[in-house]
Length: 396
Image (tube, rainbow, N blue to C red; front, side):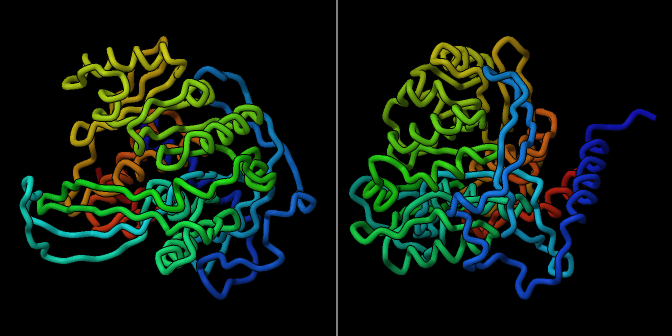
């Protein structure tokens, strides 16, 4: 009997689980990894390297073989079965970390108007941290490279990353800048408007990233970047990844300045939403035909794959020379907060891709993860568990 894509997806996941059982250890005291001297991965002399072939489509459409550090610091969310993921090259996220200051309002204020918020709350967020926690909660070994200030917000973010299963060996605390902030104006229909204060995300970066930070990039299975950190940092990371044969996904969210061609030429997949696509190409994106025309301009900039997030209209993956793949949304029971939905989608797509799923399966997996995200308030608190995503895929 012919199997459906969903059945294939589930059988592959079962096979992955059987492989992972080879790494069973004694039960952990906590379901989350905590840093110790023995699992600090910054020492390059301690690497136990091995090759792991991964295939990706796009401008580097060749099998990739690379040496990867074994991952010994990530355990399963199931505390009864801690599983070491030693056979998986990690997801590495280089990007921003913010303290998101939420204010719930009925509507946006008009010019010159003052209105009252229903509630106010500070939660961990930032596009980079969001994507990293999404990877960790999807039970995939994930590293975060970023900066926070020497303040309470920095501690809030560090704890949120660790609690999300993210390795924070490459998270730097700087003394000369505060942790980044974002003011999230959340309206009653779940839509939001956001203002970002860069803080440590945009300052105090070294002119050249450390050997240890670039080495974890070179050892990755896939790298995620966004535009809430300086372009020169993203360029260094993207070049290191490209030279090591590691695919890079660049999320267009963040700065609205022109994207350097030096960065775009190192990117495997470029991922804007329709608004960002319109701003970057200076073309309308009101319908699918217009979106397709705008994507053609991205091809001219040197990007061969464009993953467009279309909000309520789902998503589409464009590959140069191929027909676009469209994925409708998986309807949420109730939309509470759309903050972080795009980050969830991008990170979930990356996890499915590095696990060897087809493009169609990656799109569907990402759509399910984003559907779960919008049903919970906050960015990092809304990142879904892997089992919840599979359960939704089975029922959808």
